[in-house]
Image 1 (spheres, rainbow, N blue to C red):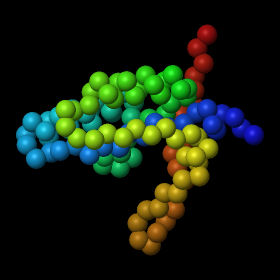
Image 2 (cartoon, one colour):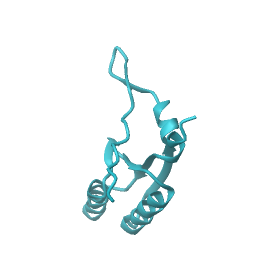
Image 3 (cartoon, one colour):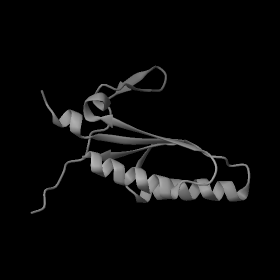
Length: 111
């Protein structure tokens, strides 16, 4: 069994933030900008993903999300193992076309 498939994975952040006032729109935009600057990539409009190679990295990024959370709205963070991610289905367009899921980036070891 490939144990790396269960140790490494993706941290998914999905959110619903209010955008009815100028202040709320600014807070939502700042939150999205924070996610991009923190290494997340947009998967869908309000769903961002970030590779995490250890549980401690996952906790670090969860603390950062909490620190940058706007005062209103809802955020859900879910950790998905590499094994689970590789079994996901991504379907585009009509007629439906299935594409493979994103792969985790290669790691660089520094001594």
